[in-house]
Amino acid sequence: MAVLDSIMQEGLLVDRAWFGRHGIESTAVDYYLRAGKIEALVHGLYRKPGPPLKWQQVVYSLIVLGSDVHVGHLTALSYHGYEHTLKLGGAQSIRLYSAQSLPSWVEKVDISPGFMKMKRNPFSNGSIGLVDVPFGTWDWPLPYSTAERAFIELASTLVTREDILQAKLMLEGAASLRPMLLQSLLEACGNIQAKRLFLWLARTIGHPWYKHIDISRINLGAGKRQIVSGGILDAQFLITVPKEVQDGQQEPLT
Image (cartoon, rainbow, N blue to C red):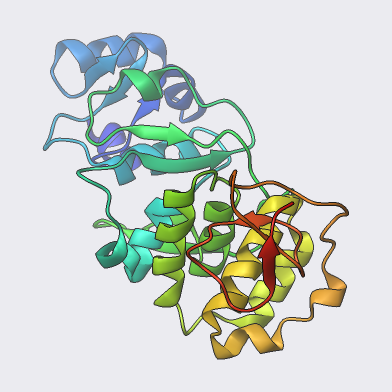
């Protein structure tokens, strides 16, 4: 037991391969199970008995077991203080980005509010605009999107009038975003819609940091893009946007 206590922290989820890497043979794992020193959450996944799991423990365990994963999108925006503007209607799934498929056990572990792996990452460079947030007794580092990156991640998924108006409401409260980081993120972002829509929202709101972004250095693609049907075409960014939001640079779509 002394060996187990020294390597396996409370709340950590591990598999038999992890035990093997730490010199604990399969027969010893079976002994720990019979003795109640560890318990199986799902087939092949173990933890020490203890309080109910928290989703942050699952995320850190994924990292320990080799997944390249970070917390982003609405979950990161909530962490950075924008939850008061979110009309979420109850607990929302934890938004995760990962370069690979997540292990099947993630969907089997009984934990609220559950996880959502985002289908498309607007950034090919996985590390830009991420920050480690300490969690728990041992200050486990959990990678989160900064507010700047999370807003661009959000913009990459906006497809309805309601989504865009809600995003505008959130961005209105983001007067302290860092223009140098935004510049780097927008130059690194590979999603044309996300860049155009974010910049349109930023220009429309008019925070001082928008004036420090050099749009000429950002690849915005070519041609018109329809974001919402029946909207207004923005003359600068060539996207259709809700009629309710106008700042003098939009024209009726013909």
